[in-house]
Structures are given as structure tokens and as C-alpha cells.
Amino acid sequence: MIRWPHTMLLILTLLGMGGGLLEEACAQVLVYEMSFEKERGFNSSGFTGGYAVLPAGESSESSGSFIFTVDADGEKAYVEAADAASYFLLITDERERKRVVQASITAGDVTGGYVAAGAENTSVQLRLALAEVKVRLARKLEGRVVSSSSATNADNAALVGHALIQDWVLRFRKRLTQSVNRQASDVAAAVALLTAQLEAKGFSAN
Image 1 (spheres, rainbow, N blue to C red):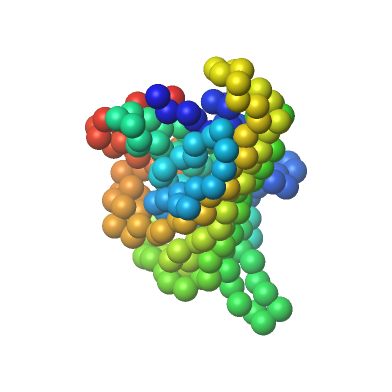
Image 2 (tube, rainbow, N blue to C red):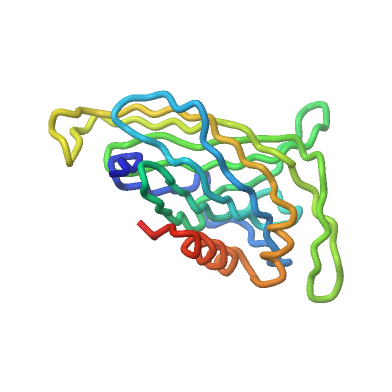
């Protein structure tokens, strides 16, 4: 049986959302495939994969969605986290452009967060209603997932608390991005398309 991370309840809320982030007028999306590696921790198993669906464009900050997957011990499941990804441009004092994805975890007394960053080092052509545009992006984002809780496990009283640390890698998928944009008009529609593909591969919604 899958021991879903964060005591079976995962609620991702954006860091620094305020009154809501800017939405991209182009409504096109970027699709990153996620992997979770080098898991360290106690009393918690993390996700194994999934997708980040992010708005394409040049806004300094915008919001996207995650689809987290677990494929382990004969079970295949996914969890959606709509509007949970904060995606923004970072410019260093040396004028280097980087892209950052982040989210925070709130689930009862669980605390933690997701942060990944990568150099803006490639681009993709996306067709809009009236023209094609070139969108700059990071080919790969790398970072960490951390979470912890002092609570007793609801399914096993012998387990008290949890701590989880994972390396988090997001790789841009150009062909998948172009395919999704031909069929979906925004982030929500892209997520629906990707979850349908996962279900066709035997994954079930958690």
C-alpha cells in the first residue's frame, strides 16, 4: 500500500500569492516532467514522478499546476494540485536570467516546501491565435522537497512524526508541450489532458 507523503493529505499553497498572480494572456503552457530522487527521511514515502504545467510567457510571476504520481509496489496513482505552482523569473546581479518554481506545503501540522531553479537557456515556438511566439525557458530545473511533522501516524500509532527530503528535478518536454498546446487552451485544460493520459496508462486519482 502506498504511504502517501505528508500523512495522506497534501495541500499545496503558493508562497507569496497575495491577491493572486498574473495570468498569461497567451494561455499557452509549458510541460515539465518531474522526478524525485535520493529520498532521505523517516515514516514517509514521497512521490515518484509527475508533471508541472506552467504558463508560457514573460510575466515576472504566474501560477501553474502540479500532477504528482506514485508508481510503486504495484500501485499507480496521481494527485492534482491546481494553481499550486508559483513560477517566476529571477535575474541575478550579473544579469543572468533564471526560472524558479516553488510551492509551500500545509497539511495540519505538516510544514515544508518545494523549490527548484534553472538557467533560462532554451526556447520553444508556440502558436497563438494570431501568431507564433518564441518563449524562453529553462531546460531543466533542480531543487529540493522538504517536509516534516511531529504528529502520530493516523494509520499506525507506533509511528510518530515524519521527515522527508528529496531531490526534485523538472525536465522540459518540448514534444509533449507542443502536443498539449494543440489540444488545450489553458493550464486547467492541459492538466485534464495529462491526467486522462495517465489514467489510460493505469493510474487512478487519489
